[in-house]
Image 1: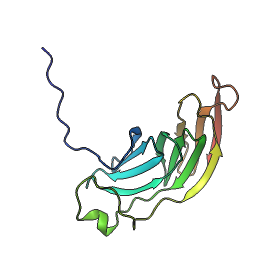
Image 2: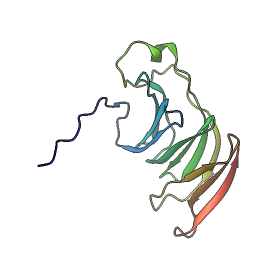
Image 3: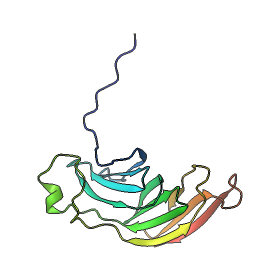
Image 4: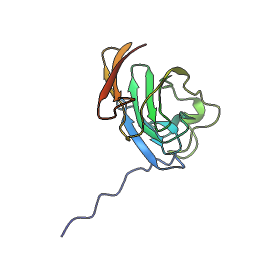
Length: 156
């Protein structure tokens, strides 16, 4: 007989739509999550509270990833965005409220650095190879032939 699955130690309840993308930061301090309505939430893995949340896209998020001091998001809205990272918790996010609660409206939101049109018809997300904190290669489905990969160099 199979053992019952382990009970979760915490549930992140910051999204109102289905979560479609997850990514842990390299230092395991932040959990990035994207949902079916285009929202991205950054959650502290220490306090289990939201650091920030914003409407990054107009359709379902396919991928989210940290790159240096930036966040890369890819969505079914045929856009890939690069955002400035917000990592510091505001005082209101550090204390008070339930763990996992949504970020208050007064927290800083990431600002958009760069955006490009991409193919999102085949549900395939981007792949990022960080060359440095300032340079990266991004592989995406080709705009014309989705069975091919298009790589682009992004400069910080």
